Image 1 (tube, rainbow, N blue to C red):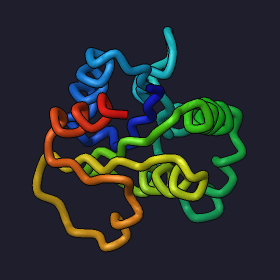
Image 2: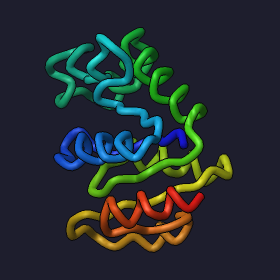
Image 3: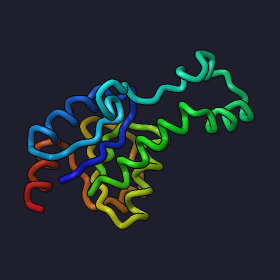
Image 4: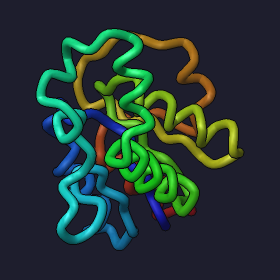
Length: 142
């Protein structure tokens, strides 16, 4: 199965989840290492002071070639993937990615490995899992 793991750079479980899904014989997109030589998109590649941008600077930065390349790399992987695993906790981008999968009619699996704030709209998900083993078992049945 081709899997897109949507999460956050701050989520310390993300590398382990990618590793374990690959170990279960799935093709897994890793936004931290999308392809050899690419270490994923970082706003700091555009400007080290990105956290102090005005709304106008932010909007303009979305048109920067580095931002466009980062977006196309991730979005192409979203189109390629059969399913999405939303690994919590995560932020806005991962939730937009998850919404894309739901809207595209592709399965969304929410993986909760630690305490997090409840969200009613996770009812849109195909399933909610509290361990990587539980998720892998479900995927193996498909």
